[in-house]
Length: 323
Image (cartoon, rainbow, N blue to C red):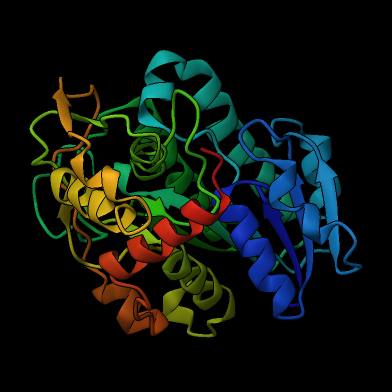
């Protein structure tokens, strides 16, 4: 499978996937409406004859049909992320994440795309208190965003059984790394804290800082997408996988590590205070994945533990972010 469509290809995860698969010799088409992605993430690829950009919205079926024509596989990353965004505007999150997802499945089916790999979410575990999170045991969703990502899994399952398209869902656990946007109301916690600390501003943790996450470096996510794309194990297809490290770090620990890594570049950052605020609505208290299923069926093994990935991310941000 050498022709790939990457939706959301100008975003944080999507642009890293574009880079990786172009480097592997694939012909890559990027579909993005630049709502949350950025042209500068893919600008260096625009002159590459193996790279094609379609500017369009997955909410438009004709655009999805055009994008999927002639493709061997789809890596579907396009979505409106962020739990708070979905709480503030559930209709748009649903339109993009459910309506757009269904458009992509229909277009992929009609184009006879062989494999459809999609970004699922750890938010699907909802209020399940069990740790580590095992793919077959989920709770009730705690946000509109979580509902949309669970619905994606249900649709993918139905399409695989009804139409024969090979679907693999990757439940991403708090992905971070190069190119993750630090700006805006819905910025993820790691890049947001990085830019604040670099500017000697105190980051504010929601709650006591004891909530924990299985923070997952971007290179682990790339590996999982490639493993899902290349597997010829029938047992590994038409299912979902945790895409994570299999460990957890508290928000307080993460913030202190960030402060320490950044102070290598600017010693004054070591003295920036970390503050605490109210708990955020829709937040899952603790998140830690079991990665046994991915290890067993996809031969996945994380290349980066959390601290290693965080150190690489900090180095990238220091070099690329404007202060």
